[in-house]
Picture (spheres, rainbow, N blue to C red):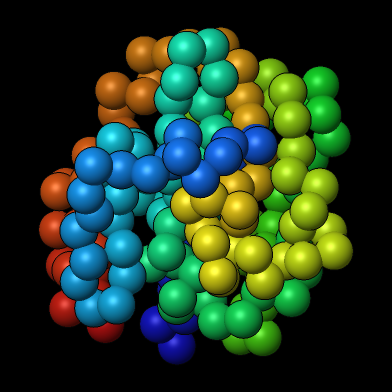
Length: 162
């Protein structure tokens, strides 16, 4: 049941090396990791903003509650995404969830590896399991997203309510 509500909350919004996403440290509670240096949406997507590119994926918390991811639907490159609007879907053994974009912009790259290996979202949600790279059209939208400590607290409160 909780997975279903997390799945319903997911409305998400592309190639980053492990060294680019390695944080100085991470916060880990209830077996989910929250990385420093990323921004988080209350719909459980993360954003790593570097220069003119923002990499987007779903959080460890989200993938943990969804279970084994078996299929991912992502947008086409050169398309656009809008903040808090669906840009794709994640299908797991438990549920199918829309992915919402945490920011608006032009999709400049899609993680094509997820077509053949959707389980990368489970095994490496912040590195190999990224979904899209976007050129933000309104970088100030990042300011409305949560930092790691705020997101950790948000997840704890959400879990306590279920």
